[in-house]
Figure 1 (tube, rainbow, N blue to C red):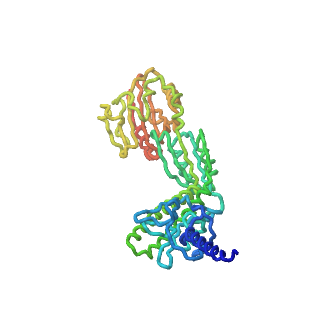
Figure 2 (figure 1 turned 135 degrees about the vertical axis):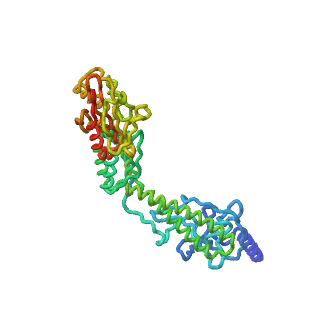
Figure 3 (figure 1 turned 30 degrees about the vertical axis):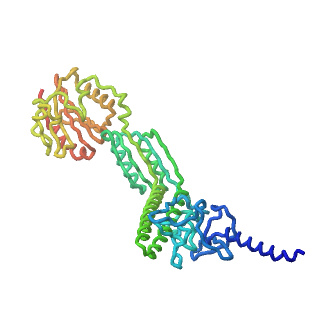
Amino acid sequence: MFRPLFPVLLLIALLTGCAHYSEAAPAMGYYDTARNGVTRQTADTRGYDGYEKKKMAVTGTTTAAPMPAAQPMMRAPAKEESYEYDDDEAEYESGSGVGDASADYDEGGSYGVDSYGVGGISVSGQGGANYGAAAKPADNAQDTPVSDGRMVIYRSEIWASVDAVGDAVKNIEKLAADIGGRIDSVSTQSGAASATIVLRVPAAKFDEAVALIEKIGEITGKNISADDVTEEFRDTALRLNTQKMILARFEELLKKATDPKERVGILREMERISSDIAALEQRLSYLKDQADFSTITLYLTAAVRDAVKRYQPSPFRWLRAVGPDSWPVGHYSDDLAYAKGPDGFFAAREDFEEHRDAWLFQSPQGTVRVRLTETENYPKADAPFWTEALTLEMGNRLYKQLADEKTGPFATRTYEVPGERRYLVGFAAVEDDLFIVEAVFDSADDHAAAAEIVKKFIGSVEVRP
């Protein structure tokens, strides 16, 4: 009795199935199952460039419709809109996978729906991979070599106390040249009382350089650090390759784009990517240079500065007053007779007598200066007494004695003082009078060039009691 109902039930079942199929089936296209929360049967398709993309397998006839607003798909932005991506979205797998924003053009003449958008156009097509997907770059994109070894940046800071900062700087410059390094910068402070040197040496000779530098004076502090930048270098190289691949895709797309607005959008993105490439290349160059040449920063101070608090001035006024930076002690006197001044020097006798100039003679370059003065021999003492007093005073100042000579009527001493300068001072004690001669040379080279001229002049001076 149920046979008359069978055709009716069959018809109802067929109508119900068609209605369900029409409501559930979406439009054919690319999709992200994780994003939409729907599990569907898929079939793999592969484009010409080897990137995989999943496409929905649908049977029957359906009508294409846009995704609902609550579940947006990747889309091409509207005109005047640009999709900003972050390089960090790229996923690296086993050091070789990089994210790639594809710029493939469908041979059918249209840009794919699921795409990287630029100014209202789409730049990936069928067979392209979404930016951020793990993908292996093409072999010809690996143009930035990455070493299999470790890349380590060595740095050191060294503090040293030296007798003469100027001489120490010259020694460091010679040391750098001898081991194949270079001096990046030198700065001096307080009249060469201290200096900062930035030294670059080959990484293989870093330990040797530190050991040699420690011999230039008393080391008061040292700090050494090592920074392994291997992973940063490799990561930066991969990001650079990714950006170059993206730029190449845009270049291909630009060749095919005909709409002026599309070309402007593509060119804008190419300019931005080119800027990113330049920054990444600069970073790679910096890391390589820092790893190839280690940096040593050297802080030098003159030992005399450390002893200033221990300085005890002489109880004798004229000894306290003499020095390369002081005004003359005593006064100009006709009791000091000479035929002429040092050969080639200019005389400033009138200004000297009127205390408008601290020096009686100076060289044409102004780097060597000489003066003669007379003061009271008080307390009244002989030459051996003043010789011992002079030795104590200059020793307290930490002046380094270079010469002790008898020049004409004067007992003279030559000293090395801070700032590479040389200072000559001498005296002649005659009854109640004390005659003093002084000369200052601004550098060791000035001393070498003019010392004999100055000594010849001092030897020609006559002292009249």
